[in-house]
Length: 437
Image (cartoon, rainbow, N blue to C red; front, top):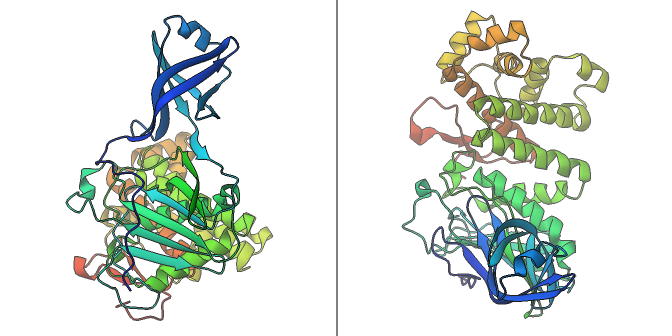
């Protein structure tokens, strides 16, 4: 059976702000309320934010607004805000959230939208071949079913164009027990982390609505950091139209399990965060190298010490970072040799008597984070070509180790592959599957 597409909450053109509310507003002050007309808008630029813009009826309202209680009233609901800017006849304010209705209501279904979602050419139902409606992904566990759809309505829009498009819609459907929005918040956080890891950039559910037995209960709109649309060149990039649902279901089940354990949840969210920021290079390539190695060191501690007990705590503290990463790669069945693709890194490693990928990575990283005289001299010899290849190698390590950590057994985009592009999609080293998954 082909499932219909969810009805969109908003029909907003590409890159245009989303109007959440337009009408009368009330600004409470110690001297009484100030009434006016205005709007509440979700703005994408310069960063995702919910903005209230209000025009006053009185010229002297500005002075009274400065003595405002820090709330604005919309439809009899008091909402907190942060001051953004003032004008003579009005104000603009930032809301941390905007809501309508009762978020304490128990709901059996939550709907939401996700901007900049990839198209999933995947099976409608688990274990079946892809159907003609190939824009839907359905994942489930004992408590609820999670469905994600790409509307396909922006088919001519290219990820190379950047920007923001509201093309993703999702539902969480609880099987038996109903949930309040607060109780379901960890699920939304997990979905955000899960989608971020798959896409290689920050995504999150936005514009959430709750339903109980088909009856609408509330709307809740939250400011979240969302990355602009882009071509995803992460481990999943080559798999968008080919990967079997069962492998994504495997990763999803691991996320569900990890999020029930505070320590696993903390480790996973930090690893994904450092992985994404390392690839984005927002703070420059040096910052990315530091963040990616942070992720590797966290994976070392969590996997080879705390979970697998390959190394005990006493020995761990005595070992070099390069040695620990070598052990981690051995557990992952990933070679520690510098890949053939990394010509500049190979030449640099030979010149400095470094013989493995982890040893040259830590050498470069230490030259950055420990800037004493000796390391500053080393750093001057590390050009951008070396740094770029070191970063690519470190990301490659993080991707593969994290995939094994999550129990993934399918194919991935091998950023270190030096052969024909058509062969870049390959199985993870520990897989027992066949490549055509």
